[in-house]
Length: 202
Image 1 (tube, one colour):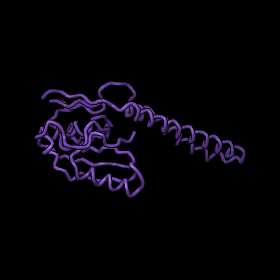
Image 2 (cartoon, helix red, strand yellow):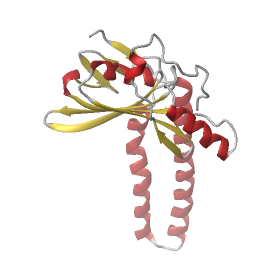
Image 3 (cartoon, helix red, strand yellow):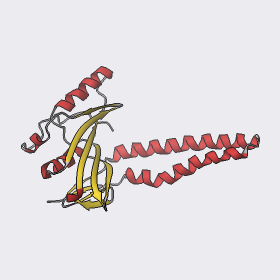
Image 4 (cartoon, rainbow, N blue to C red):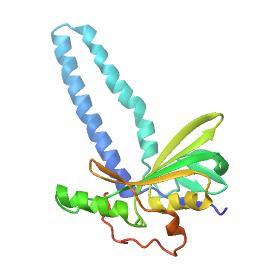
């Protein structure tokens, strides 16, 4: 099987990183303010809350690694599958789940109608979303996730290969719908017969 490569959405990941930094800054300011009050009131035992900040710092490398801003492949699919640096044989893959991120098209009712329409139709191409790959690695069943461009195209590679459970869903804000479309029909066509301009959430 020819190896196909999939890349991160740089704009999406930059927004995720900025959100993380803002949350970290807010948390740091709040904790420092609380520390000053604890010291003033001589409640030193409450300074243990600073462990929250330490935990946040501990998670920072992982958060940055999961949201790369360099144009390098983060998912590779071939006889060997690589997801976010984790590599395992294609034969060990048990299930694959893809979620397409959609953008708002209007009010709550219009968004729900749009979501329902997407779930009932052939999947759109060239969309950013989350790919979850579940595999048997070293005797354990683990799932690796990565947000990538062309997430539907990545999922269809597994569908074409066969032998794995697969699912596709659409996310818009807090709403989610599972696709009711038979993805195998996409394989018989040169291109999925879908809206090529489906609004993307970035």
